[in-house]
Length: 124
Image (cartoon, rainbow, N blue to C red; front, top):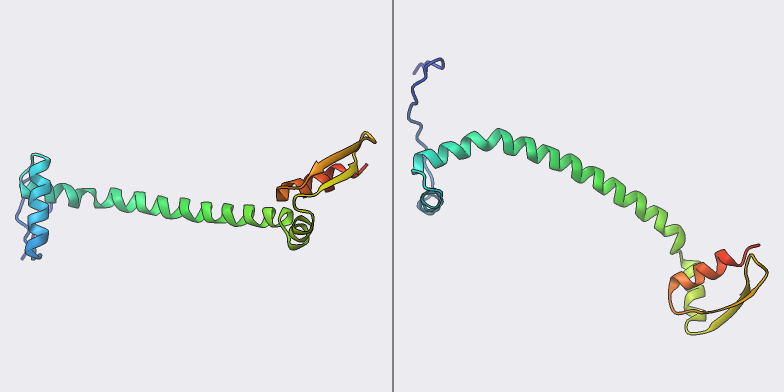
């Protein structure tokens, strides 16, 4: 069968589907105030847009995963096993250190970041 693709007249396209799918499509069409035929046509017309958006989301998802991996690597420097061991052994204890201004500072260790703070601020 030859199809005149330059014709401005719509032609019928049929396909088989499960009755539940037809019922769902008919319900969605009715909710949108469309005939089943118009609704299915609008879905088919949206396929290139959906594919374009999907491809963009895939790219964005990959970029976000790369960013998460980079941030995870950076965080691992601050939350390493040595720091965690120091935290566990000093939890709920107060440590004294000398800060950059040569002042004695007392810090109660209740968070992992407290250990990091003591280490960073104790260098002169």
